[in-house]
Length: 259
Image 1 (cartoon, helix red, strand yellow):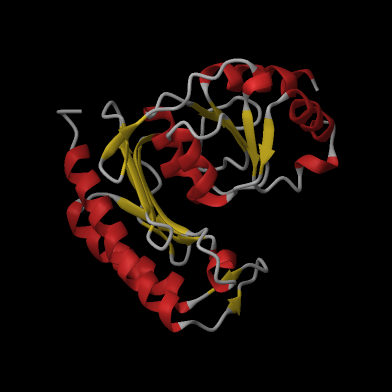
Image 2 (image 1 turned 30 degrees about the vertical axis):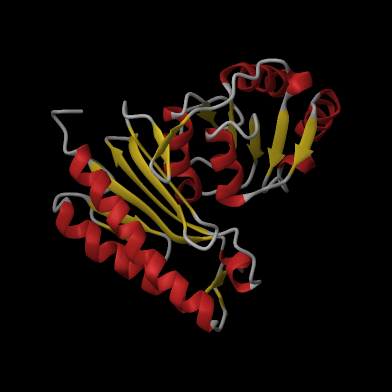
């Protein structure tokens, strides 16, 4: 960590998240008009202005780094240092006046995720992590639970539409029957809960890397395991998530692979 500027980058990411939070709080109180993008997802002025605020902080902090944002695309090369930014992840929640939305900022170095900041200003939580530095919630270090027995596990699902169409749906059903409880917190919320010991497994089959890159660093630094549903590490093309305590993740991955 001493031979790379992750300390500078982490401060920049946290500052950028706070700059976005100011924009988001403003529009949360004021209200916004909603547009529909070409992929049928909503976007607002809050999304765009929050990303602009983030880019204004990140660009000078690491001049050689590229930035890949949800609203304004890729500025620079995907190789080397690459910021991954979702300024307002959970726009559907934002426009429906529910507090399950956040700002996600991660840094990737030569394909490896090295730091992440997850800021949920209306919900009242900010988490961050840097490789080797642990995971932090509002300034206090957090850790995943020690749960290893599926019968004691709490499972949360998010976007699982694709999963429902194949054999994995039956696998999920069996795990739910064998578990202690099932919830569907979604968005940033269930990853925050996982990282601080509040639940034990998160399953999603339909995500974008910008949604989960920062959260992956946070969960890993909290002692958890974060892969896709096939057990692979995250890349820019990742579209699914299996994240959990080491023991529960291993059991869930075995079941999915057997399907």
